[in-house]
Length: 183
Ligand SMILES: CC(C)(COP(=O)(O)OP(=O)(O)OC[C@H]1O[C@@H](n2cnc3c(N)ncnc32)[C@H](O)[C@@H]1OP(=O)(O)O)[C@@H](O)C(=O)NCCC(=O)NCCS
Image 1 (cartoon, rainbow, N blue to C red):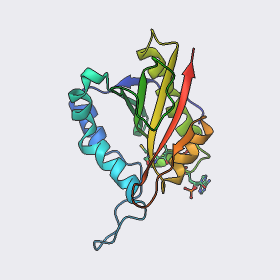
Image 2 (image 1 turned 60 degrees about the vertical axis):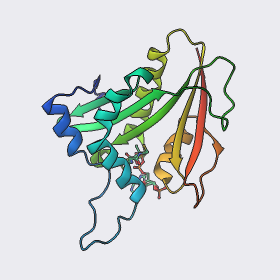
Image 3 (image 1 turned 45 degrees about the vertical axis):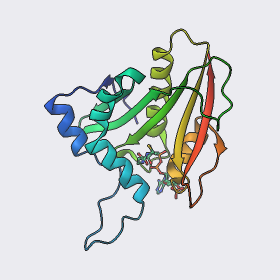
Image 4 (image 1 turned 135 degrees about the horizontal axis):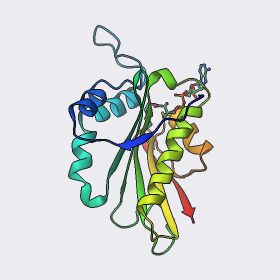
């Protein structure tokens, strides 16, 4: 990756709507009704295509944020996060610290399989945006719920300092990951 892209909040404009609706962060669905090889990625992509813009507006009271980065080929990456009400029992949250949930971090398929540099760029943007949005907090807990089969996402979380608090499993696939940020 040679160029740092500019990030900006998504807008409810035709341009951003169309870009989100056609965003591709995973491989296409196979033909003949065969299952997708990584349905957890397909679900993330479907949420980004069809739900995330409305969800972001609906959760403005939780300061939900949706940020986009475009490159010359179109939408290149998406990050979303929001404040959680209260502290989940699963996490060791410092007293008084706000908790932010990483809702989505996804990079366009053309930026995947390159060692994670672009993914880490998106992850860093999410953390800086969280710090920006919590200007009065000395400590901020950041959590992500990651499907235990989503190895690419768990590897990204580990590279960026998150720890696993509660592992996912077949019955409850979403594991809890967290990091406590300090200013
Ligand atoms: C999560 C995400 C941003 C991480 O991106 P990333 O760090 O660039 O990781 P990649 O997508 O390249 O995937 C890493 C995988 O590719 C493999 N890989 C890395 N470089 C490779 C290369 N040059 N050739 C082939 N495979 C490679 C890794 O071994 C790893 O495989 P594994 O899953 O079997 O362990 C990205 O995978 C993504 O957008 N996924 C779809 C959306 C999603 O699921 N988001 C997370 C939940 S919100």
